[in-house]
Image (tube, rainbow, N blue to C red; front, side):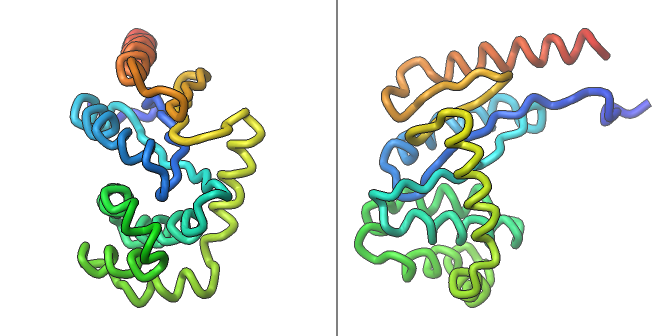
Length: 175
């Protein structure tokens, strides 16, 4: 019998993020560490929460969705966050540039920003975030618990690991 039985639910970590947010850039190290530690045993889900104070955040969220459609969500998100100051200055041109550097179809990313094909996803994420009390980014939700990284990221990764380990332990026993 294979290990991929549908009975074993993988815990989900929702990461409410904004691609023009310096705090989200800081959180990259935590996200990389979590992915390295858990791999496929923890599903990291990017959720969009563009803040009004950052004028390119909404476009960046749409571009990230197009990158996801092209199979490169996390590499794209990381690349844009690494250049958060440049995004402030260059705006949408940087979003297309990063896509090209990663070997994505940059024209398609550009077109997606024009035709707005991903706006509904971004809007839905933002609405859900507001509904559950997300006020800033990054905010994490795992096992029904909301952890706000916008105020302080101190000790957050440890807390996420604690909850993930507990959820994985329960999933393991239920099998």
